Image (cartoon, rainbow, N blue to C red; front, side, top):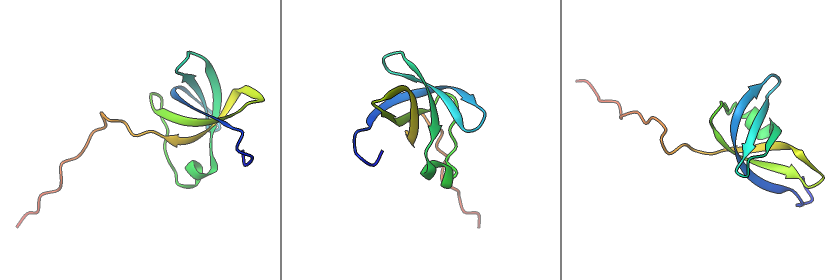
Length: 86
């Protein structure tokens, strides 16, 4: 959407479909079909069910979207730093 008329929304992945397609539930309850953008595909960003994502939607078709960003999870497991053995 290079013309700047895209709608940016946030949602939660509810189902993973074949061919890098996802069912995403928006905050207002609507479910849309989304695919990942080229940058996510290029950098091998993994998206799983339950992840929160940012998406771009065209104002002409509100049933489809493009996932542009996977949000960080605050509850994510953080590893302790490695201890050096002497």
